[in-house]
Image 1: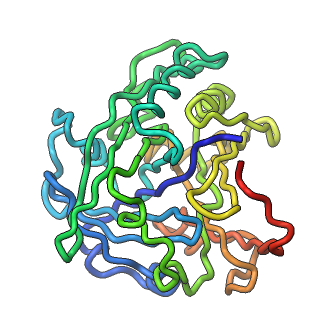
Image 2: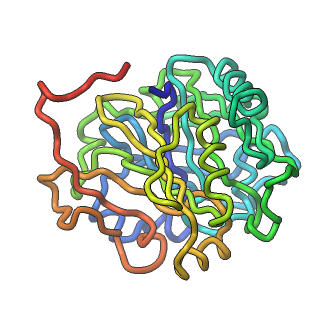
Length: 313
């Protein structure tokens, strides 16, 4: 079983969205104030889930930093258009330095390596933000570094910059300061949301197997084929007994092909787990027919009786 866990999802929004959250957000979720990031003009709000993960509503309130500033790992989000743009994983049993060492070992020496896609991870970089009361929260971010390799897709597949694999986020200050997921007032949502069920990764059809192998090396999880053009990989969550998945999916339909052309290879859809007693309705349905809300799905799940729940190894 993989030692990596989902950490958080990054939803990039403009100033108007951030300051006037739309009804599809406020009607479905409890939103927790975040804060302002150190050293760059960005701020956030959080939708925190009971499994210890969260959806970060991220906003540049002024001009994003230069792409040349290597000390600001969020700089790569500057050219991106609003929507789901990135996601973070963590490893709560190892330090940032230990995690990147293990991942880079698999990417360079493991049986699958980087599947010829030109990916490794850089060194952890310190980050922080201040809460409204002035308390500073600290973490380390480890971002992927890319190179041209045998199977690297052409630049046209990376709209406004390459972000086709997740980054790592490790806490320096206590995790509960950054993610107060023990607070039921913050993790109880009108839609019944409990956590991240899946992150969908959209890739070209001729590279779906390679991307599945790449994600296997990053997550330390075996890909399971679900048909010819879909692979799922198991990943843990920070608290509780539930599990999450990363789904590597080939862009086959016109809708997915258009989305990949517009936004690039990478994170395309978020599936949020919803308790069966919540107003979820269908087993899986999007929060809206168009726009950002059409890429965020609610998936109804049934809670296991306590005696049937499994504990994480």
